[in-house]
Image (tube, rainbow, N blue to C red; front, top):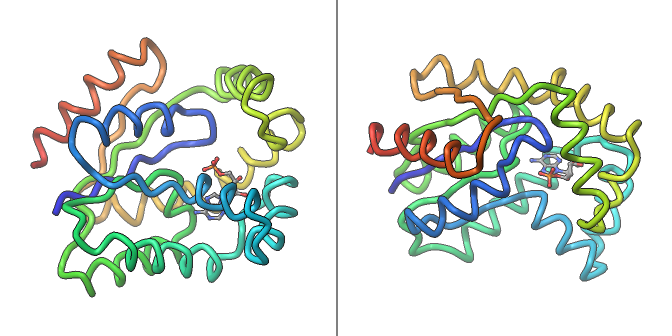
Length: 191
Ligand code: AMP
């Protein structure tokens, strides 16, 4: 199995690049943000309890997210690899993911981090908010809150993976195709 974590702050292009990467490498796309938005659209109790966290720019509690990932794995038993997008977002989630993958006799193969300046991120997210219908993209104070959460809770996840030597970062500004080529080069080196 080849298991890729696409890492980076909100608006760094993880979703855009994920769509291209799953098409090229045949990985299963696991976006916890997409799964949570689906739960909200379906008005499940998980979705209803997650909504207030998402709307205020906070992280949904680890136990909820880890349980959701566990059941996603159950539904994709024959997968030949996963692309993790927006997960793990805390060190506790990274540790839980290591354990879930160990139970499947596999592990994280590579982490690629997309680096984008905060001013560019705000611009991209406000622009996305005009068309995405995402309530967390329309309010600049919620966007800034998500960056603070990223700095405090998510960026330590990079150190978790740096220790294993599987971490690389690339510039996330420029053309979508150039960034994609850069990510593919990292994947092809690691496979
Ligand atoms: P995203 O679509 O990845 O930007 O996620 C949108 C929102 O969903 C985040 O701001 C969080 O509130 C929530 N969320 C998504 N993934 C996670 C995660 N792995 N852990 C906790 N909260 C998450």
